[in-house]
Length: 401
Length: 182
Image (cartoon, rainbow over all chains, first blue to last red; front, side, top):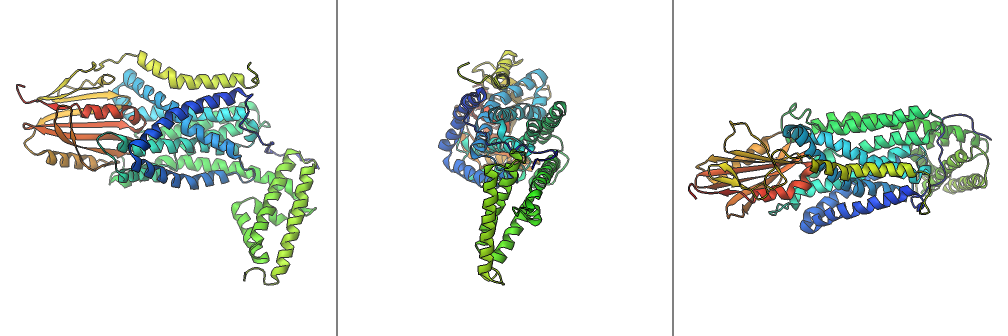
């Protein structure tokens, strides 16, 4: 079998972050070390100066970040990214980008005040300096990852995920600083309720449409640039630049003083209304682009697995179910009903093998390889085990177990 | 070179150059551009009515319009320290309560800590607290002595707070109210 022409993900063999022969690897390592000294020193200083507030802030931010990590990681339906690469992306955002941004932001603020005016710096400094410095520095980390392990960024969605991890790392460390600023300052301003109040603003209200979203959009553009050789280079470059401009604009809008006097009526109403108006459009744009990219991948998986129906490696219903989390869960629930409590685990294995088969077929361009044959055999074996479990469960299935 | 691959070397150098330009180049340019009204190191600024403050030397003095008497303002990296003096017959606590209520009433800003008693380097005792919003953060403090009220409000963009925080606290701690003739 050979695969016909459809815009196909490359789904290359696994890349690795540990590539000591790559110049980009050493630049990444060097800047991460600088970041660990810079930002690590700041974090350690906060923790030792204001332990209760710092630990409370860390606890809140971890609790806030874990669901986001799960959601971002799950955005890739078909080929999960390796932990080491995701950790490197997160570390770039958390350590290198934040450390470099501190000196860049301070200098740019000063320059805006000196070359423009104090009121310009006061009102527009954050809107000008934040996007210029921070979006650029975060994007540089993603470009380094591309240079080190381009094989891993083989769909636009991969770029989105790595970008979002960089943004999330940046956001968590930035928020930690903001949350502990009052506690860290002199004169004993150390109170956990301040941390809580700031967390509500920075984390819950403002966190959804912040750095993870901005850099996710940048990543979507870079992912498109490097993973779609079938598209003319000029078009890919233009789209990547537009994605960066979009992230820049989202950040600019968020930091700008626009709308600050438009809504009155209390602290929370002001914060929430401003956040939704400034943040929601960007997040909706990213969601739309993501769904568009995912639709392409789904079309491809369906296309690759359909010929496998004849050999029994997948049924049309199973292929459809693979294309959404909802569908996969539905299949596992059906397996529980039919084959008892062990059914869902077996079905999960079956789905993992079927996805692996789609990825392997893509990599081999439809040619049969020993690995693909192993997948088919594994699928047949799991299917047999499911049938046996269903037979043991009897006509009423596993609904009583 | 050094056993490294040639592929990607140019891009890596370009990325390193951009990072260097932002993190090192911008601060160099900033220090090369002169500050029009830099505060002299250790200089004591007279605000009026016997109120004085010692700005940190890396901060600039903001030129205020002539109608804003008994007031001084200093700036760095988008942060502002504003100090004002007024005749005030009331108590320190009363002044703090009024200021605190006014700040809390601003949209998007709220008081972020309980009031703290502070003592400046000259022995002046005042009440200070912190406020926070989604894009700014700062401190405010009130001092009274001899029928004179000194109010200090420091306000920093969140992005610059880490850099200017110590300076703002130091300036609050430098406030003096000297009685007439002293």
